[in-house]
Amino acid sequence: MPDKLEVEQCEYLFVHEDVVKRVREELPDEVTLYDLAELFKVFGDSTRIKILYALFEAELCVCDIAQLLGLTQTAVSHQLRVLKNSKLVKYRREGKNLFYSLADSHVRRIIGQGMDHISE
Amino acid sequence: MPDKLEVEQCEYLFVHEDVVKRVREELPDEVTLYDLAELFKVFGDSTRIKILYALFEAELCVCDIAQLLGLTQTAVSHQLRVLKNSKLVKYRREGKNLFYSLADSHVRRIIGQGMDHISE
DNA sequence: CTATCATATGAACATCTGTTCATATGATAG
DNA sequence: CTATCATATGAACAGATGTTCATATGATAG
Image (cartoon, rainbow over all chains, first blue to last red; front, side, top):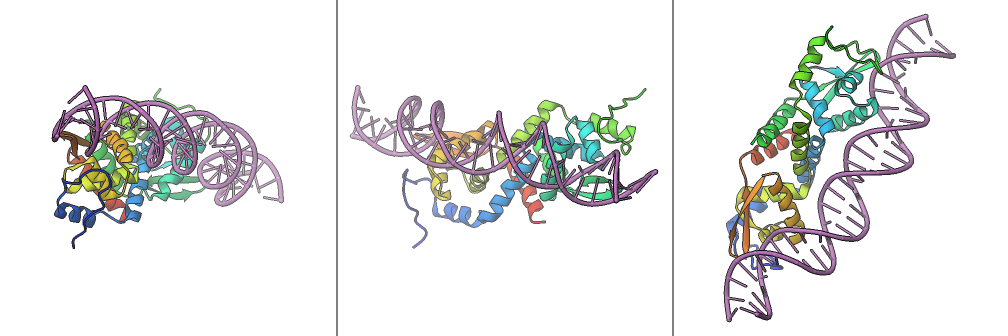
């Protein structure tokens, strides 16, 4: 007895068993889907995008970023924490300063793909 | 006199002129940054990610999606509109049904890159 | 130890976002 | 034309998010 679905709303005529099966098999588990959405949420703010773009060019300390982009220190710090939690940036201390940089190459690729899309 | 910046908070010792220049040159304009963030915002919701994943396998109508993923018709419809506005999905009508499908290959690539990142 | 600089953190607040509920639209069968 | 099915839409509401303000932490110079 293959997985017949509860018919609630429409006739559900249009999907064949194999499609249902494929979707079910390929769909990542709830946790992964959640994590994935969380990751993209991080890219979904123009302040954070700006910060990432700035870090494309060089390692920067918090106040560098703030001044370069015209943001407050506090806002940058809060957003850097978000970026750090998602492992998109890393930092190293040098005296009083914390220098932030991109964590890996995924950041550039993801933003690159996004740019491709919006430039049609 | 090259672009010396207003020193507000820190000494701004750490960034050289050429870095400042590069960041300023490479940073897309406000509108583009905003659009880019808007795009990623769309990926930043697990319901929409689920819908996109389902559409990886086949063209589906609204109620197919709702039943396959255990969502309400209304929620799916609202989210499909968001996806459509961002040109991530398209649809065609067939009688009473609207069949949705992925708009282009960017969707897969962007989600793929995201998956790469979260799987470390 | 104290003052200062760079940065982080927490609370507060306004704004944005996703879902639900109720209803409207649009296609089709009879 | 009317009823019905598939889908869209709008209002309402709860929960999430980003910024600001005030303050704390942590390193360093003196």
